[in-house]
Image (cartoon, helix red, strand yellow):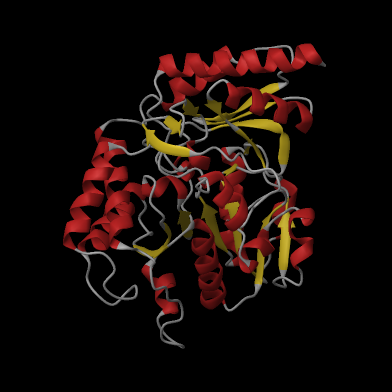
Length: 400
C-alpha cells in the first residue's frame, strides 16, 4: 500500500502544534479550499490575513506566469535593476500617500521586515531601547520574538534581546515611557493577536507627537492590516499620522511570500554604510513574488475592493447575534467574535470545519474567533458563513 500524504505529513513535517488541522487541500479558488475528497471549505481567515484578493486571483496568476517566462532569481537583493521590484516599490510608495516614505526594502516575510526595521532604528538613532505593546506579536525569530508582549510565548527561548520595554496598546499614560533613550516603538494600528483591539485616533496622534519630541522612530506594523483589510489601504491612513518605518507582508503577496519595510531615504541610507551591506538578503524581493504583489495591489484598486469593506464588516456584525456571543469587535474585515472560553471556541471551530467553514482563534486571545475573509467575499457568502458559524455556536452551547 502506498504511503498517504497524511502519513508523510505526520512522519516528516515539523509540527507547530500537537493538534494541526491536518486538512489535505488539493485546490483553492476565490474564498474556497477543496480537500482531497472534493469537499469545499469557505476560508474565513484568508490563510491568516494573506489572501486578501482571494485564492489564485486570475490577475495575480497571470502576473506570476508572465514573470516565470522572463526570469526568476538572478542575484542577491539590491544589485540588479529588476522591473518587478522597482515597479512594486513605486506603487507601494504611491499607496502610502506619504510625503516622507520613499524607499522600500523587500524581505521574504513579515518577521524579516520586523528584523530589518529593528536594525534600521538602532543604526539610525544610535540607541538600543525598543518598545512594543503587551499582547503584541511581531514574529518568531529571536529579534522579533523579543518584542512579543506575552511572556509565556517567549520564556522558553530566553535570553532574547536586551533593552525591550512594553506599554499598553491605546493607553495614553504609558506614552511617558517613551524617552530619549528609545530607538523606536513598534506598534500595530489594530492589535492583531491580542484579539483585534482598537485604539483611538487621538491616541495615535499623541503617540506620534511623543515620538517626535523624543527622537524615537515610529514603526507601524501593518503586516496584518495592510493591503486593505481595515477598509483603507493602510490602517495608519485613518489615524492622521505618518510612520517613520512602515512594515508590510501577509496580504501583500496575493499568496506569494514577500514582506517589506518602508522608510525615508535619510533613514534607510544608514544600512548602506559603516558597514557596507549592513542589511542583506538573498531572496528578498524575489521577482515572482514582486510580480504577484504588484498585481495584488493593482487589483485592490482596479476592482474597488476597498469600497465595500465597511459594508461587509457591518453585515458580519449585524448577523452574528447569539446569546453565547459576548462581543463582535473590530474594523473592516478584521473581526473577533468573543465567546466564554477557549474550550467553547475550539468546539465551535471544529464544528465549523465539519460544515465547510474555516476559522481560527488568536495567539493571545484564545476565547475569541478570528474573522478575516478575503476582501472579495460577497454579501451572500457572508450570510452563508454567518449561518454556519451561528449553527455551530448553537450546537456547542446546547451541549453545555
